[in-house]
Image 1 (tube, rainbow, N blue to C red):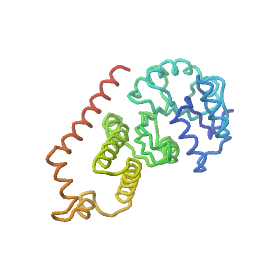
Image 2: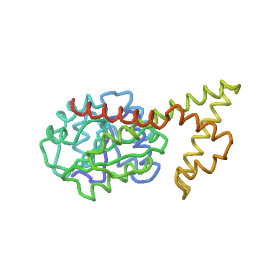
Image 3: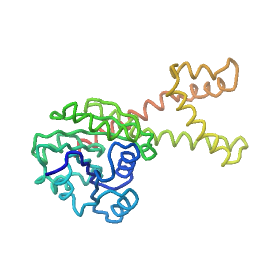
Image 4: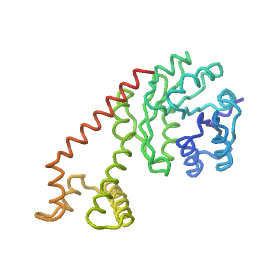
Amino acid sequence: MTDKQNAGFIGAGNMGTALVKGLIESGVYSKEQLGAADMDTSALKRMAEQLGVKSYSSNSDLVRQCSTVVLSVKPQNMKDVLEEVKDGIRDDHLIISIAAGIPLRMIHDVLKRDIPLIRVMPNTPALVQKGVSALAAGAFATQKHMAIARAIFDAVGDTVEVEETMMDAVTALSGSGPGYVFRMMECMVDAGAGVGLERETALLLVIQTFLGAAHLAKTSEHSLSHLREMVTSPGGTTEAGLGMFDKMGLEETIRKAVEAACNRSVELGKND
């Protein structure tokens, strides 16, 4: 008899490992309740040795033993994995997918079962338990199922619930967002070096500035606009810098970047 408290991860890569680590460290699951399977035996061995979770010899074995299954596989491998495990899927399974661009209808069409499905878009700061994940419920997922999923992803950051139709927008904003932030950080380090700072010093200043500003924004009762105004004195240095942002069209650039990412996510979803 399968223990409904067991959760299994198909895929022992960075995100799967981050989720398992977060679940253990938060106490949501014990290591005895967690397991993983992966065609990459070295990645699977590494997760099992580092975190002490059970490793399964095949995806099918994992599905037979775990009622909650997290599909943390690359989108291009999703159909093959689903075909492999579909005969072991039962009505009591909860399937959670974090594969970007894979709609729930595709999973349902392959499994051919009316079971609870949940689609999740996490982002890479989950690797340090500072991520944000958007969850979209399928037609047969209840609030109980969503509570299970939220507990898993709350272990590596914050969670929000959205309609699946919003997943392309989520992907463009928070899924791709760390890449935008890292690019801006790179530019600021280069700019700091350009005005005479040592690169290591500029890097430290930039990282801590982003970290501190984000923490302030999250914990403050004030809006982003108000926080910006607090640091912008009339005729001061911040005003001079922000004025150049406006002159060069920063807002329009960011809007177009998010739109481009959203459109690409839509395109990828059509190729499932």
